[in-house]
Image (cartoon, rainbow, N blue to C red; front, side, top):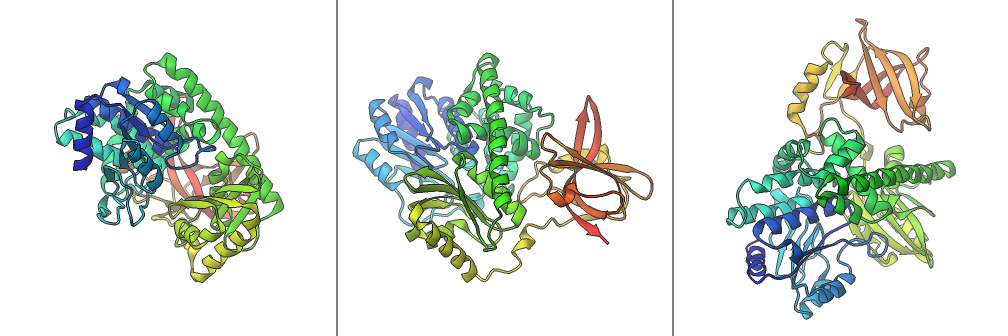
Length: 506
């Protein structure tokens, strides 16, 4: 950090041109915006800052060789990465050869040997690990640089807090643990996001119908719309939205993201249905190939994981018999380690334990499939499905205390997420009185329950499995596992529940 601060002070003093290099997901886009505003607060002139994001389809993750050409053409003397860079040794070396310095801020796993950058700020460094900060997203690491500049009196104290609306977005959308420093950043981030000064976020939340700022609205309303740009078009759309100066600039961008998100849902559903109709193999790791938009592969892999309770890779053919895909995992099966095991069968690959990307030659698909499953079996993993089961914190036999007062008390514990899980309830001895399919494809579900005192509770499930959709109130008795939600319809608020799992009672 000291080396990074010193180099930034030099850049400010000498009026150098700085290029911020980010990533195409929510974490990368928010981190890029945080870094830009941090530099401006520290005294860098806005005209001396450029932001470059990779193209998911042309460049993939990490620092693109295109960066070198752009840096030279625009007379950049300092590159600052966010959410990437720790393993881009060759690109950083080439920048050095052209007299361009690099500061890396990242949260991904590092190699044993670090790139020859001026500074590498990453809590996962092998030579100087910072375990308590390894929960940070890329935007969280970028914000650490902001806080350091405040501590060194290069930024006026108090100004940094207005960046926290971006920090919570990147942290939650990157599925980081909400413990330690993330707990602090996300708690105050929710407060800042609720009254954000950014016209782009104001317009986006209006389009998305966000009424309450919490982890759920970030993860299921705001995040997917910001991510849709990088998945189906260009992440520049989301970046420009976050940097918009007024509603006139922001409104068309928010509308574009809204339409892209709708398209993303259609493509995702189509791919998932295609895979379901042809059936998946009985091997421990699902590997599916097809001709799908590569921007939705990770989401589809996640859907397969949820449905079949297995790690999944979903790959699409790019042409020239090259396949590109995304994997999702859970429990003790680490995708980054698995891809290291099969490195001789792939062109490239890497990521986190639970999410990774891969590129493979078509002729090696069979070997990839065999080796991945061979590696899984070699681990002798047991009881992995336990990681996916919903475990209730409390059993309830009546709905008397499920009300708006309880919801208000639970809000004090927000934002919820990994490491700070939302309270979950099992409903026992209740009667199922109504089953209603909802949505254009009739794949969403509403259940009406009645307890033994005659009180009712409405349950909602999106993309419900077929066995839930076919429940019959006349015959089926169930024990649902739920979390509480607040419904606000035409200004009338009520306590409802999101159905997470259920058990059929004979």
